[in-house]
Image (cartoon, helix red, strand yellow):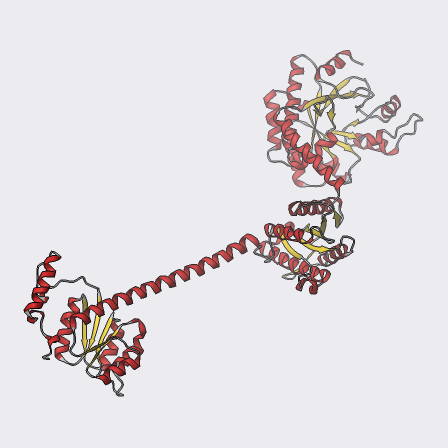
Length: 629
């Protein structure tokens, strides 16, 4: 090739050489032949598709100077195969090269590589240029070729294409990350707002829905009802049959309640946004419903009846028939409360009241709520009383019927109040039992009674037996026999002087575990009593199998003994039963001489009650013992 653009750089005219020398001098570099030029590597390949040897020579030299690795092919088949194998950064192709079907190679390369790979066409004629332009290629070099300019343009195009590819990958990665983030956000929203087993709103989401419902009816004519549905046997089902089946029960209940709401609330009004209604699962065995309604309509009762009727039907789970035993509580806005949280709490409270009362439905009741608030207040104060050691013991004498001598006493719990009065044990003991405080209180009572017994022994009083009440929750608590043994050993007293009074309802139940506990206590040497005998419904047949020593007849049977001498046949039979079983028989609640006379005639062994004395302090009891009958 003889054109000016094909000359070597060292053949350029003297004027051009001087110009380049000046430029290089200004930039602090020495002038070098192009053979010695060092350029930064692109780590990219330039595919050169050409048959002209001169074109190959200069293209390779200048493209390598531009930082490319070069690959040279001479026909269409090699061009396509090499392009697919090397994935070049740029392709330079002679326009007149054709494939087997006389199609320009550059068009085939363009179709195969797409717009992401820059393609430069070497044109030798106007027809070549037009064909390239028609194919959508705009990087066209016309003879004579300026290889320096062409290689620089190729380098810029390859760099731009690589940057575009990187940008596209970054954009795709970002879009993928955003999609993942959106999915995670949706999952988070679902996990935070919806219960996974049923897909229903959870407690938090339901409170939000209640809040919106309240806003929709506030200041208007409508009301908003919240209902809480409790499945009384759900926990029992879960424990007996496992998580999978309890989940099936939950899903079935969710479908049932949703259907109930649709029936009562009318699907048409729901679909048109004229009514707010929703079902939620707010706890494992507890669901909630909300619905706007007219304050004086019967829709609340209709919803309650529909739910209870359907949920009272047996549920089939894997061939097993299950009964859920539902109960429902309801509260209304604005009648009962002013905010969403209180509305749900009142409905839950009503549901618990229904369950405790053995009924299936109950509205929120202010009086019941006040009673519950008082119980919570007592429980809170009881915690403080235990920590501050405010609880005390008083001792009611136990008298031998035949000799009228005090032979023992019953330790009774007292809780003094700030005004000097005492809160009745009948009020705070059940709260202590239900809250779990009775185990701590029971240990305090037993330890204090043992301490007092030791103090009396040191003063030479006695021996007298001290009775201590033990509730069922204490009896079944972990380590109860060991706790009794610790108290006895700590104060070094005779275990035979300690009598543990057990309520009839708590021990005459036939429970092998309870009976085992009683035998373990008996091995410590303590005495065991059946308290309030005659008030329970348990089988008396169990009595002969228990390791008990004392039978205490409830005061209700003593009250039937009147001055006219009409002895109660039942009381007499109880005394006879105790004697037959070789038990010491004690009558509780003796208040009159006539009652005592009747008991003496029956052969009753001991008594306690106001006829002798109410419960007194330890020093007062000592004075009564010393004074004698």
